[in-house]
Amino acid sequence: MLIGVDIRSLTLSRGERRLFVGLTTGLSAGEAVALTGANGAGKTSLLRAVAGFIRPDAGSVAFRGADGEIEAETARRAALHLLGHHEGLKPQRTARQELGFQVEWLGGSTDALAAAVERLKLAPLLDLETRKLSAGQRRRLSLARLVAAPRALWLLDEPLAPLDEAWRGVAAELMAEHLAGGGLILAAVHDPLPVSARPLDLGATR
Ligand SMILES: Nc1ncnc2c1ncn2[C@@H]1O[C@H](COP(=O)(O)OP(=O)(O)OP(=O)(O)O)[C@@H](O)[C@H]1O
Image (cartoon, rainbow, N blue to C red; front, side):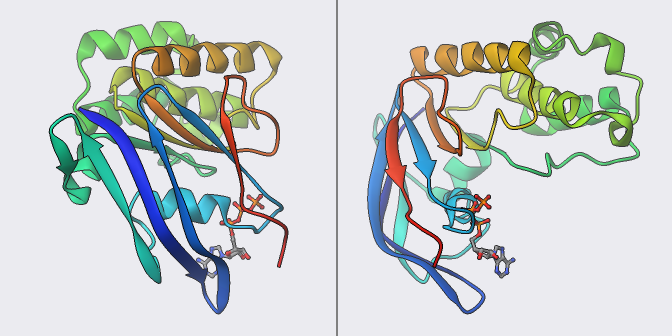
């Protein structure tokens, strides 16, 4: 069980551009951190570095379990969800196929999948190809994966952006429940997170 993430002296570049230098921070079970900063400050890049998709120039990301450090590859494979702008949905698959595939791949149960479909009210959308879903519907499909295959660390990139007010309320409930159960949330945001969160400002556009 993942109980902490430690970001130590992290320096990150994209292309020729240095995004930040020597960033040290962390988060623990039950805690949310809200990453803020101007467009291009590096919020998405930091989430992707924690998820292991971008190699930092220097520094490290370490994952803590109750019995000590968890190997990064193991933690990334089994203990985190990354919910990003593009949702990672295959356009020609139906919502049912996509959700079923993802939940099986992530190791979720059939019961948890049914509960997630109910919670996100996805039943009327299940036979539509994901390319035909609206942005908010696509985000609900992605949120269902978080419910159906529970993982401790949620890396969320502007999680509320495409959602209307009612669905923002549901997303807020999901986040609050996740934190109450010992989950961790690192979220890139332009608007405030709907749960209590420690702010981390990556700064202005450079
Ligand atoms: N694949 C890439 N190759 C080169 N540069 C990239 C790549 N992806 C992102 N960048 C650059 O890295 C910088 C940081 O981008 P990033 O998406 O992390 O910012 P952000 O803080 O999430 O911005 P926003 O608020 O607009 O979502 C930007 O200048 C962007 O152009």
